[in-house]
Image 1 (tube, one colour):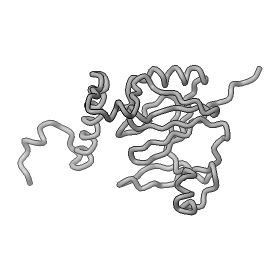
Image 2 (cartoon, one colour):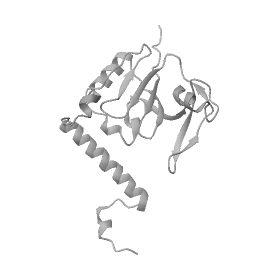
Image 3 (spheres, one colour):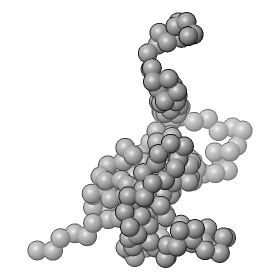
Image 4 (cartoon, helix red, strand yellow):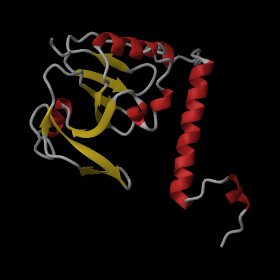
Length: 182
């Protein structure tokens, strides 16, 4: 009996320019179905893919285009190498591991907005989510997002604002506005 090979996805998040290693714990067909059923990516704009199914880990990874632009990797990683990190403070990356090598047969993904998000298996196929909108339509004056997408954006924004408030004063209650300044 042979075990199915675990899928590893190198995911680039445009907002914040973070990278993630995602192990979806699904078959290739299940993963494609899950991705194609995703109605919007708005929910992931601020927090990235942290609520994706399976295991997701933030990593430090230097894409080849950045290495070519700067002439070298800023930390000496070789092609396809990464290390696990955590964010502290104002997006300061703290290493949690030594360098590791991504599998050659990894999938890739880009997560940002409705017009540029995709998933791609090793063969290069581009898989779009259900809420995908072509770029020319997305940026046109006539584009109107679906109510589901608008609601997801609103929820994501309110969640982000709540985090900012909690980090600023440690109080997330509605009555803090009524409090007298000290």
